Length: 110
Length: 113
Image (cartoon, rainbow over all chains, first blue to last red; front, side, top):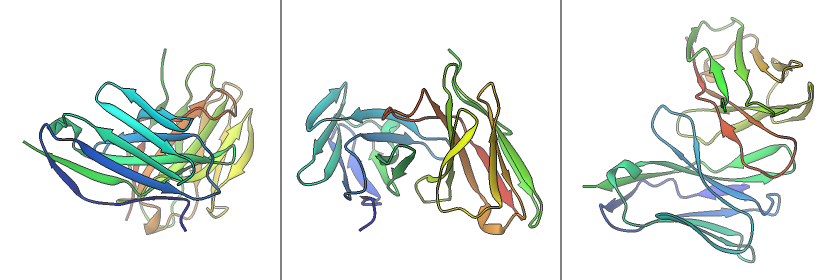
C-alpha cells in the first residue's frame, strides 16, 4: 500500500454541488493531515489542516479524519468554478517528510 | 510577514549540466525542505535542513545536494542533469520540527533538454 493514496479523478461536479475528495493512508503516516489546492502551473496552497478524529469546518470546506479506517476526506460545499484545481492530501511520515498523494483533479462545471 | 521566496521562477538547462536553485525561508523559520513535483504527480521529498544540517533525505541520488545558510536560506544543487529532472521544485519552511503544515514558495520550473 502506498503511504497516501488518492483517486486521481478527474472528478466533475456541477456548480453549486458538493465535491467529495477522499484519501487513505498507511501506518507509516502520522495523524496530522493536510489538504492542499494546486492550480495548474502553481505551487500547492494549504487549505485545511486536521489533527484529531472527526470533522473540521472552515467556510465552505470540511475536512474529516477517521483514524480507525485510516481515511481523510475533504468536502467542498457550494462548489464554484474557481474551485477547479488539483487537490493534494498529505500527512507526516516521521518528523521530516510530508508525504503526498498524487492528487485529485476537480472540475466544477458552470 | 514575508513568505517563502524562490528563484529563479523558470530555468532551462541541457542534460549533463549543473543547476542551483535558491530559497529564502519565512522569517523565524529554521527548517527548510525541498520537494520535486513531476507533472501529474504529488510532491516528492528530497531533503530537509534544520539549523544548517541535513537531517532527513528522501529517495534521491547524491547528485542532489543542498546547503542551508546561517540566515536559514537554502540552496538545492543538482549535478549531471537528466531529462527526468524536469519538474517543479518546491521549497518550504517551518518553525522547528513540529507537525505544523508546510507552506511552499512559488516554485522553480526546471526544464532539462
